[in-house]
Length: 463
Image 1 (tube, helix red, strand yellow):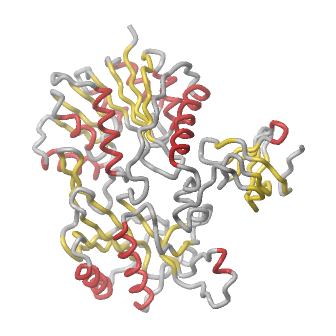
Image 2 (tube, helix red, strand yellow; image 1 turned 45 degrees about the vertical axis):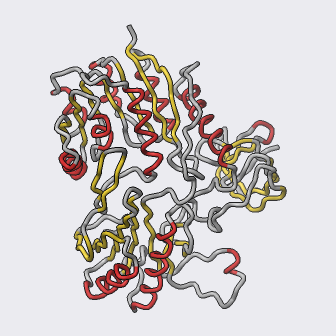
Image 3 (cartoon, one colour; image 1 turned 180 degrees about the horizontal axis):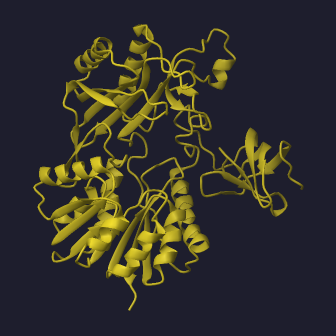
């Protein structure tokens, strides 16, 4: 079968590729199609054609796979947030483990590295502690709405349709957010519709309402409501804040972040406290962490404890070790390890994260954590002491090759590498394998119903 761009084909999905797309191989030629499950027979239009692979758009499922189950969320095939809901959870974990293994073997060219079974998330719904909903003056219509002439294509607040920057699905029930969040979302939707002020338009850059960010603290069942607007209008936002505060005692913090940034990202130029305090407090194990509107914090609190427990297990601290965390963020991993270490150092380039890390250490009475602000390649050479354990938890792009070189030069006895991207994990482990043995990798599922997977790798120095 010869595959051509803009042509349509009937294909059988035989696998799930890394990135979550279904894989068909007509005559051995790989074609990747979103929203498919192995065993599906599908009708597809080819949207991209390269020499050795192609991408297709799903037009119709001709014969559904026996693996398919009904997704709990009515939007799961459209919003892009939870595309794997139609795949049983145990199978999701199998594919995630396999994607880690295949990345290590094919990208990292490392053979025989043990990859443990994925540590599952519990629960697999209502697990996200942070959701960000966008406002749109012209919402995207669901297929059943298109057939109803009485439906108006007006204001919507929800999640973006994949591949678009200005089309928002009007989300009435998000299944990965705790239930109370959906009630808050509905009240905000109603208030905005009746406010007389329009939603922000990403094309014309006009309008008032921009985002609603909800954060939830598991330990204390507290909520933060961050109302992001283009301009300051305290009278209107305070009225909304008062309505929410009186109705929901669990709301600990209501903020108004104001931004006229042209980008579709909820980052503020000014923050106004409307109700309560400007933070919520979460607990990980015995430690407390203050979370502000724009702080980074792992989005699955319960699974985060499992992730950090695995980091601690691999670090295997006895109490007299020096630990170095190269991407220390807001200090969660250094603080988690502090009680079992002699001294922990963290390096972080983001100023606000360093400030938060120092505050969090102080909040917990931790005195053996020290945080340095700056680029790793600049700060690392000035550290006099060779650490016993190096923690590496980089962003999705992985480590810069200069940092890899510095880590190899330090030659610490042990490395614990935490990754949210199997591809860059594999690349970095290959570079580190010149002086380190990759002992074991354990994936941890922080993101049920998505292809995303965290992994923790243990490396020991070669003799």
